Image (cartoon, rainbow, N blue to C red):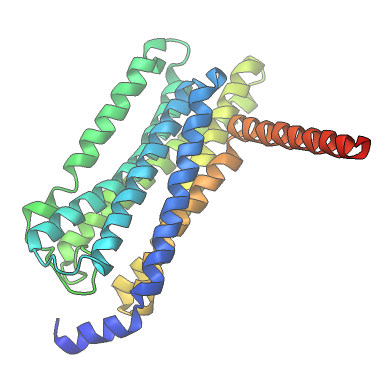
Length: 306
């Protein structure tokens, strides 16, 4: 990249505005994720297999927000670090955090498929131990798949750019899109279709117990929520994808802001789509509002008596 191209990026991407907005969105995402974790941890009714996996997704969102904020801080404040190796490691953890979120949704979908197929005959597959093993395998996978970021020299330090694979490295870029996005999302859609047709089969066979139909409908609802959430999450990368394909630089700046923004929206939607979590949070705020109202009334009553 020549000096004129670098100057053009510097003038079009006002990092002093973009980066603080991005970091603020990341902090909001961390706060919401921590709130969801606390709600699930403090309520025994939510100590279910599904909510354990939701906790894992919340943890990956926190990890993602911390890693991306660190990359943003390096971009604007720690400009003296021009090491290619340091840049590759930042890229490695950046891609690891992206994969961690996507694959956490994949194991949520896989868990619902297991429940749909084996909930009557193979109960051990639905055990707490099995869920923990799935989470462990997920983290092993997401630790391994970004290794090309540090094993190759495709990523190098570029002033005013985040440490990502340059769009000129077509093979590495294709690997990134396939492994981090296309493959896991395609598998989730296939799982959704599988359970969808199972539900339709149950609806056609009236002899099958109603309770089983309810269970399968619940699986379908959870998978639909997963698709909505992962759709929101991946939408944050649309601007970056447009920048890669069109080289229109305004989309580079938009991508920096939209990635953490859509993660924040995704965490808010997690609360709205999960009936149990939403109900507990709503009850908490209703009780808090009632207590405040009672305190204010008592104080006003004492003032009138005096």
